[in-house]
Image 1 (cartoon, each protein chain N blue to C red):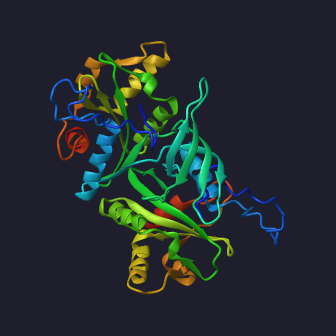
Image 2: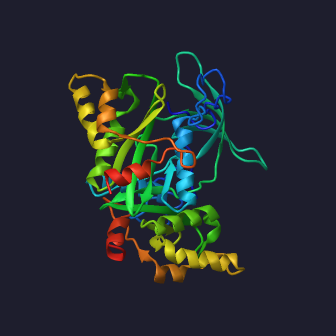
Image 3: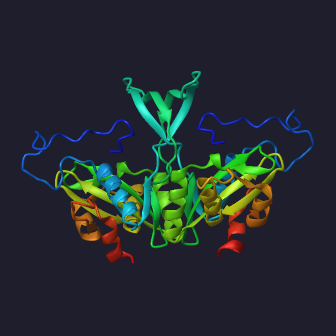
Length: 196
Length: 196
């Protein structure tokens, strides 16, 4: 799901094996790439200041060669304690996580961690706007799903219930984000309708 | 200044060589450690949700041993394109950078980068609250300095002027943050007076 820096999935060439139908709306860009492109477009046009946080890494060993840059020789990926994206839009604090699933019928809750849920609750308590952007990569559909709705599925799971959110619940309770050309995942337009 | 993860300056033992006078207000904690402790206190008490972003790292080579966690074998520190800290307080977007200097008479502007200044300007344009927290470690004094005031010094430097902010300008134009025991650098209390 979260591809760390330098380890991004490279997009398959157009018309490659993975693209069975000639679909020009999604040429194998990952959700992360789409959102980064979107955030850059927002920044350039002065719409919002939203960035992806760096991948959290636990650095264990660093080499400092003379006359050249420090080289990290041993480090490990850490589980993020917050969400991946945050920033400011129209004076409001925006905070979200982005997740992609190949699952056709539901979004597995194993994609989210307990402390991310706690973080989302804290953000909402303090007046921030919090949500997840979900992509069903098989259907090529992307949804904005409010964190408030995610919580009830999370609690149901914690009390022994199902470990995923059904696709149809996301269709109904979430908000479809159409894929566009210039601003690929224009989630702020959807946000305008839902929250502002 | 910015110590990357895993490379933090360890605090000297109390009464060690570096503490000539018995000063219990600052036992060699770095500004970063003080702010992290402060942010944790804010989070626990429900005052605000403000986190330090992970250190940005360019990952070049990752080893995936069987049955154990991925090991990053080669990576480099990247220059941050935004500030180190952001979050939400009373519904407002908060964004700041923290810098410590051993210089007694001025704060060298070389501690800040051009794209950080650009980021700060964008934050303010979008209704966020932006500032730097400066510590003069020799004087053991910490100040909140609004980003708006930093810009004029930055522009003066860019047009050939001095490359630092005089200590007395920070005393006058900034806001002293007293060092406390439970919430070590209580910058939000200062913010309440200045902005809210």
